[in-house]
Amino acid sequence: MADVARTRTVAADVDEVWAGLADFGAIARWAASVDHSCLMSDQTEGEGTVRRIQTGRTTLVERVTEWVPPSRLIYTIEGLPPVLGSVVNRWTIEPADGGARVSLSTRIEAGPRPPQRLVARAVGRRLASAADELLTGLEGAVEGRRELAS
Image (cartoon, rainbow, N blue to C red; front, top):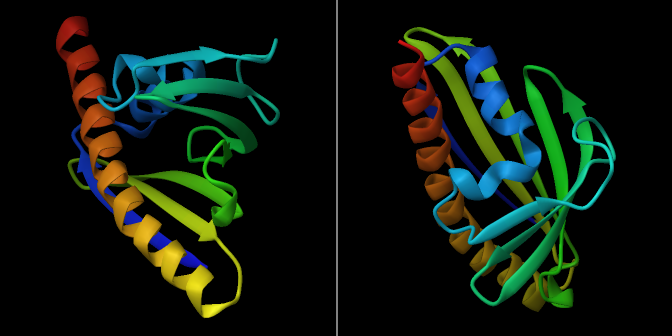
């Protein structure tokens, strides 16, 4: 198992940040590494919501397992190589001085054997970089919405 986490303070309130995350099917609008995204479920919010994302040649399916507005969104990521086992992203949003503290943590369960743990750590490093990109994109989208609204 490997855990990676990234945190950033965004110059927006918690509800504004949540609005960006809660538009679950629209991640391609703000995530630079996502070429396409769409909902695969009839529901558009809450536990059980499912989206498909295309990033390069990779297609992933993300299923919401926890939806607690405006503070927490957790989803599984399917479609990665089977050696990874399970991968779960957890977004948390908290009030902070100057805005909202936004965290994205990823847990990679690849198995207990040493080679599996090495794979989890290597993938964790790559996903930490992806988390930085996602936080940057979300921050830009939220702050862009604020500018349009004013």
